[in-house]
Length: 376
Image 1: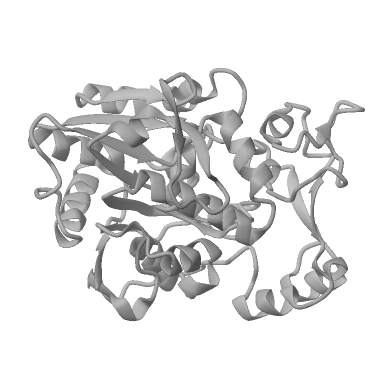
Image 2: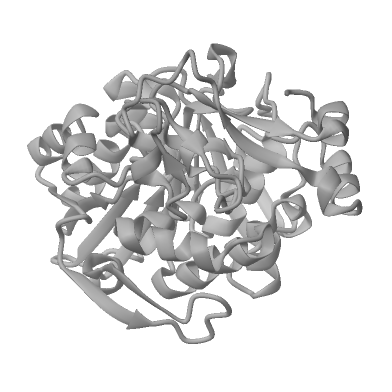
């Protein structure tokens, strides 16, 4: 039986965040037995892009800062690190600076580094199914303790993202490309994430669900405000509870189902005890796919009926080339100054949709997809 704590946190006021994170961590199992004086703790937030925590896209600096304070108070050393989805040179440092993560955490006594410029290590993954070895940030495998600090968000490829998928950021840019190339299907990419999780194995997870993102992040209404902090010593269980709060079965999320089946954590709600705000629910939450039943149904039909293609909206594209930098398949060009996607080379990872700063990429579906899920 795994325990997941759910605690209210209505805003990013620093005192309120500190209190909510401390309560959630204590209810979720506590850090005392995990921390030793002088040990090094890697805090791995989700710093996908140049947007702050209020936007719903990245872990807020104050949630990470609350954990830095707790770790430092117990005589341990805190290291905050991540590698964003953006691929251009210096992207990691830019995200750390613009989100305020670096300044806030360094002021509290933590070391902060971009995994794009940090020391890396080439590591084999025992029992890896798709990802047999990987070049990862050395801190991810050398720290005494890893804490995953995800944001509550949907994801066009994995349905939901959380504490498990958050570890994809221990791969620097080029290695993320390899992960997407190896994990071309939903199931294969779920195995890539589980392989990486089995290597890093965070001992604790805290989710920033004060704000979050649902749907496909296209409109302002996709930004949601659940006003919650979740915490658990089982990162898989934490993600499962986040799904439950949003009205989604954890077993409909390939990453969680496969993590559960591989014994990496618990995703079956019957084996999870929720403590704290046991009646909490996440309202106004929409999925990239409207219902799990329709999603399963679509998978039964011929590939032609499953069409899901990224499409650039020309009037929104300003030619910044962020999608080209992010594309692991090198399937995006700029023949007329605006992005154009080569669907023959596209592997449908939707990195372009996720990382376009102007939200100029959308998903174009076939006739059945439109009827089941809406959209173009």
